[in-house]
Length: 212
Image 1 (tube, rainbow, N blue to C red):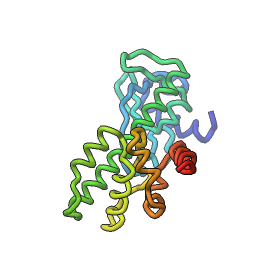
Image 2: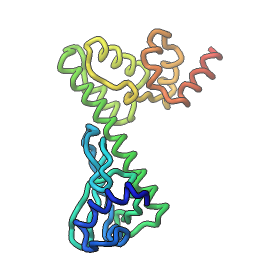
Image 3: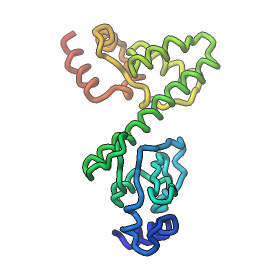
């Protein structure tokens, strides 16, 4: 363990553990059981290593005394914190890394979904012609928007200066109608939503547009 990290972890973990001298033994008392939080603004500090600017917090618990710490996901792997699955089984190192990665991905994905819906709600409060329900219903069912929906949303969000993150707005072209919308879209409109496309969707557009 890096000496700098060691001192930070030592100062934070030993007072809350039954083991009071051996850091490696103390760490064995702790487990990640799946509790995780998105505090939305990256301004928290990892309570294990003191790393700043943490947004996604993962709770570890001392199974001997019930103490808890909120830490960054990387520290779970870096310091070999034990990880349990939903059934309470202790996972292997590789399986633990996969679970932590999956849990972090879920937090990020859920945050993006909230970001999109919050932007739509904000828009509906200003733009009286905007009917939010159908857009949110489609988004919840598909996890993305059709090309025409996406252009309409981005255009209206920009028109009314509503805070939004374009990269959180996803495009769906699984349906043939959506594929046709994308391929027939005017360049000026396409440019508005281009950043929302995945690399695979951009490749689809280039390959099929040339055949029109």
